Structures are given as C-alpha cells and as structure tokens.
Amino acid sequence: MRRRGRMLWVLVALMVAGGMVSARTLDYATLHAMPKSTEKDYYLWRYLSSSRCTKTEAKKLIREARRINGKLAKAYRKKTGHRPPNRTRKSHAKPSPKAIAAQKKKHEQTLALLKSPHPLTEWRKLDPAMQVYVLNHAGTDGRRRLDTRLSAQEFARLSTQWGFNTAIRRILKEKHPKLSASLLQKPPKKHHLSIATQMRLGFYALTHHQKHIAEKWFANAARTSPQRDAADRALFWAYMSDKNRDYLQKLTHSYDLNLYTLLARDFLHLKYPATITPSLPKARLMRQSTLSDPIHWARLKQKIFDKKTDLTRLAKGYHSAESIGYYTYIMAKASRETKHYFPMPYRDWMKRLPVTRQAMLYAIARQESRFVPASVSTSYALGMMQIMPFLVRHLAKQLGEKVDYDAMFDPRTALRYANKHLDYLTHWLQHPLYIAYAYNAGIGYTRRMLRRKDLFRGKGAYEPYLSLERVDNEQANTYGKRVLVNYVIYLNKLGTPIRLKELLGVLHRPEITDKFRKRK
Image (cartoon, rainbow, N blue to C red; front, side, top):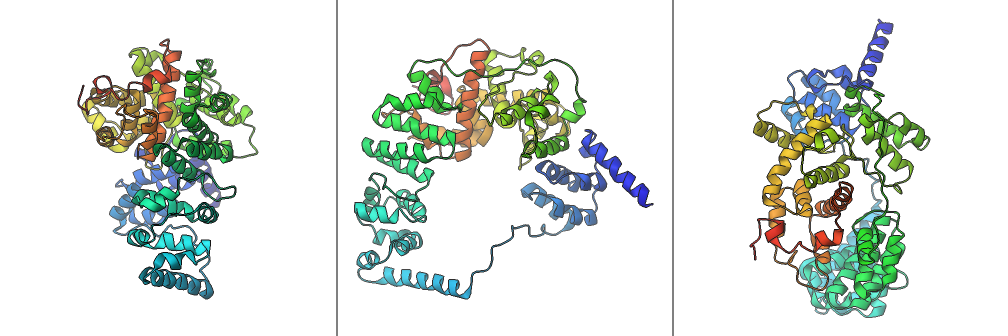
C-alpha cells in the first residue's frame, strides 16, 4: 500500500507538470501536489467553488493558499460557513513594557501640547524626533494650530527624521498655508526623505513657480533613486524645470525604455532605441497544453528566480514560435531587463485586424503578461490578456458562447475576448492612453478622471506632462504610461511611423480622443 501511495503521488505530480490540469476535473490530491503559488490559489478558488469539494477538504486546502483574496475567502465561507483562518504574517516581537510606557508618554505629551495656550512655543522646544511625532499625531485640527513658517534650519533638522515623509504628505494634502510654504526650500545636505517625497516637493515647487527649487529636488531624486525608471522620471522633470538639455542627454543613455526616455529622444530629434522582435522557428518543443498550464508556469518561475539557474540555457528550451512569450520573458530576465523584447506572435490571427488594433493588443499583452499564456494575477485575472473572471462571463454572453475560465489560457481565445472588450472601450475612447486607463482601472474610473477640470485640458506650461503625473490611481497611472510606450513601439514596427510626443500632444482634444468630455 505504501508503494502504491508513492506511485499515486508520482502520477499526480506528472499530471500537474505535464499540462493535464483542468479546473473541471480537479481533485484534492492534484491540488495538494501543486507548488504554493498564485496559480495554485486560482485552482483552489475553482475547486472550493465546486460541488466536488467537501467541507473537510476545504479546511485543509485553505492552509495551502499563498494569499487569500476576496474571491477565495468568499468561496471558503460559502463552503464551510466560516471565515478563513487568520493568515497574517508573523508579528514582530511584542513591545516591551518600557517601550509601551514611552509611547504612552509621547501620546500624553502631544495632547498636553495641543491643549496649551501657546502650542507653537511648546512645539519648538521639542527635539526633532518629537516634533515630527507631534505633527503626525496631532490630527488635521492639531496641525492647523501648529501651522507656522519653518526656517531653513528647522526644515533641515526635521528632514533627518523618517516620519517627516508622512508629515509632508499630510501638510500638502491639508493645505496648511504656512507649513506648506515652508516646504518651498532646497534639499538639505543630509536628509531621510524618500524619492516619492522628493518628487512630491519638486512638483509642489514647480506649480508654485519655484523652478530653481524644483530642479534641485528632481536632480537630487534622480541622483539617489535606486530604480532606473524612477531616476528617468526625475531627470525628465529636472529638464522641464530649467530646460538644461544635459538632462535629456542623460536620459538617452538610460538602459530603460519608458515614457521619459522616449520623450527625451523626441525633444532631441533622435531615433528610438533598438528593440528585439525575435523570429523563432515553428518547431514544436512541447505540447500546447503544457504552455497553457498555469502550474507549469508556476514551476518555471521558481527556476527563473533561482539565482543558480542559467537563464540563457533555460530559454533554449522555449526557443520556438509557439512558446515565444516564455522565451522572451526568460531572455529579458537574463539581461536584467537591459534588452527590450517586443515579440509579435499570432500574426495569422492578428493580420485580420486594423494596424492600430493590432498595436493596442500587442501593447496590452506585453504589459499584462509579457505574452505568457498561462499568467494568473493575485486577483485571478487570467491568461495573456489578464481578463477578470466577471469580464470573461460578460464577454462570453455577448459572444453567445459558454466557456470555462481556463479557456483564457489559450492565447488566441484570450486575444479574441480582449478584442471584443476593446470594441466596447473604443466606442467611448479613441486615444490609446485613455483606452489603457480603462482596460486597467475600468471605464467608470476613466470617465470620472477625464471629467476632472484639472486634467488634460491643455492649459499650463507643463502640459500634458503634468496631467500624466496627476492621475490619482497610481496603478492605472503607471500602467497607462507603459502601455502607451508599447503602443508607439509596436505601431512603428507595424509600419506606421509615429512619435510619442505627437500622441501626447492631442490629449486635450476630446473631439479626437474621447466621448466623455464636451467637444470644442
């Protein structure tokens, strides 16, 4: 029996690795054999949502989830009648009685200060750490009572405290006039302000006509940012602050391909950087069911992010047209993202569409999944085009089809469904940036964003670039920029020459970009 048990687990493992997983035929043993991953979480959700899963199995399997999102929690509650077990991360060691007493003392000191007849006088007697603590814990009304003009020395001392990042964000949001005006200062020589805070202060200075101060903050952020794309963003805004073309030249030497590096080349009238669109042989290296299997992808990711793996050698196993998404993903990682792959697969299907639609589908697929057919997000967006389950149901109904969610792991089906969704989005939106916002954050959010009177109106010295930074949905903001860059690259590859600056230059013209704003 023991040998038969081992043979059963080997068979299950082979089934999982061989691309034979189907949500319709899942069982407890198959799920248990899967590696802990987002992909496994998706199948746990499917299984717990089915009649095949028992209450006992659900209680065991929920502990194997990597992350319990709302969908999985709801399925578990419906199956068992209980909430999922607490999966919070291991808490840090409990604070000592001495630390608790110190925290209580700070809180009492803050309350006493705010109740005093002269809170500003008392606040200035404190050390910088306590001053920042009071600013962060005083509340909006308390900060209003502490609204004062900070000297350069006071600003420098407060900037040495990590908590001042939070204080700055709150001061600017609440618009305390004197404290806000105090932030129009050059960067201190030593500070603990994050890149995000430095950029925030740069934009604040720029919009208050303090170009020299803004340039200092942006340049400092570019110099200290550990991330290349964040440094490029800061370099671009340093250029916008004082028009020093040296900043543009630095951007042309960046290895990253982003909105700011392309704009720098537009301003300097230079060609865009070379990108790689590999032409791979049609040889069939593995079964299509394997390439469409999320668990195969989960196991492959473990290898990709293992520092011992020879990525170039690993990529050779996927050197074929059918697995181009896997190949280019691995090769990009092998180059540490310094080489930019823009594959153009499924030409047989894509050629049926207008060039602009082809470019849009390619741009979205590259951003969503890097063309990996078996991708699954933490919210269970599925396949190469990362289509959410509720949208799969809606689109299937429109198409008059009955499909399992797993159908989205077939790349051509995913493209067909995404293309149907784009038919709807492009009825309201014509500009690729706005389409990207809607694909990521929804048509409702995009409609509300476009109707704001302070965005994409074409007014102001820094437009439309400042509006791009002020889109308040951070995920959609970043997503839109990246998809737009992809779109420009793909449109050029498809034989339609276009520059990024041209596309950005019409964002304020609703007659050619969208139907949500009044047309001029």
